[in-house]
Image (cartoon, rainbow, N blue to C red):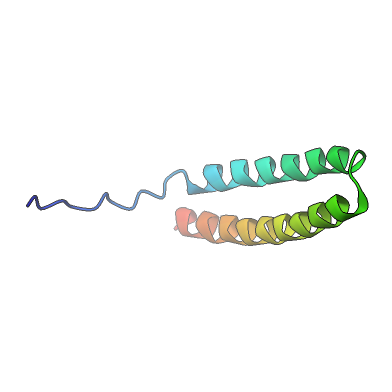
Length: 74
């Protein structure tokens, strides 16, 4: 059995990664608006619900960006 050490917690680029994730999620929301143009009512409702979850994720990621930025500035 090998004794494996976990990788060190490197948070140097967390802000950049989170910002990229926010941009990707915004892009997904925008793309879903185009998809809704060609969807039936049931599909539109599913897309709307998914977008609500995406918006909640964006809020969480933005809060985490603020926290990471504060910790990075110390």
